[in-house]
Image 1 (tube, rainbow, N blue to C red):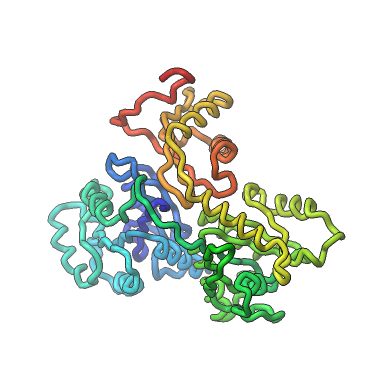
Image 2: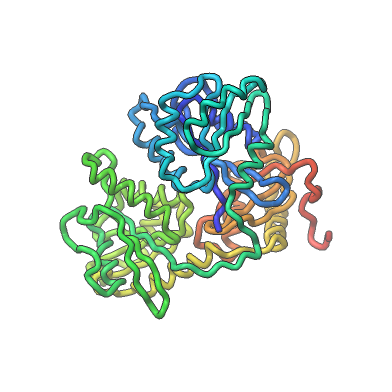
Length: 454
């Protein structure tokens, strides 16, 4: 299963980013008294006690704020995505200002959320302020804990509450293989609904040449070779400046939700059309959520004999260089040509995303990579990687315990990621990699051994 996520939400200026930095023990998020500083979600990995298990902490923008740069809707979408993905929610309030109408608005938004909520009364700098938190019980959500990020009060208590509410998971869990969910996404008129009809061998979806026929995300159950799948047909997206109606807005929202729900995403392109800004926005969203993806060039029969597939491959690689590992398929959705091959490849990606490798193998790969190409000097010292471990799947998530995460530049991190991709059995799917500073009491105190070093 993926690493559990813990989302921090609340109205502006209750100290969400300070809480994020405090729990992470690092200054990662910008903290300022000015409203609206946090817009995008920020994440970091937190270890659960000394268990070598982790959760992802997610910082979000303030709910209910009007962004001065007209980005209110974008900020709210980021918050909604964090809530939708969260396993535990930290609802943060300010004990010094007391209960505000916006706090009640945030709570009302969480009313339908079926995940554990912890009510965090922040800025309780002195113990006598704890009695002021009683009024927050009126919100009726979650266990109440008073904390102070500036005075370092009750950090361990909050982490214990989070740990108690995280979903159970472990290396030895035996989970029945679920049906693979495949989201079919793309801009308007690229043939998504026709493709779904071909999969289901029925007119399950309305097919029309009118752009934007599908306005909601629809799940279609189908079988192939005795194996069942769920195809999620999604609305075709438009440029953001063209999103003028409620239907357009909710279509965009539901398409994004479908990407988050999917195990594998099929990103559709029309063989007769160049890529667009909408395509880049969709691919960016797929990457942001670390979803296995196949680029699908549809209507290939219209170019048969006119253009070699290599030209389209080169073109797509140039348009989306950061997704160079994604496979590319050429199909004709209307006739079903190459559709079965495409589904087989999607199944392979699904299995790759759930693959787990041993710590020993990871450490051998890291040792060889560091020996072949050592990291650059940082503050007159060579940074060290002590050990690596895979902590989760979907996506494969690897943690490197090191001397100082800041010492490893983006280029070197890309080098390590590419090394993993070349040597591990999940080379065609996204890999999450975190660099964490090794704790002083970590028993694995020595850097990775040389070959034969024990």
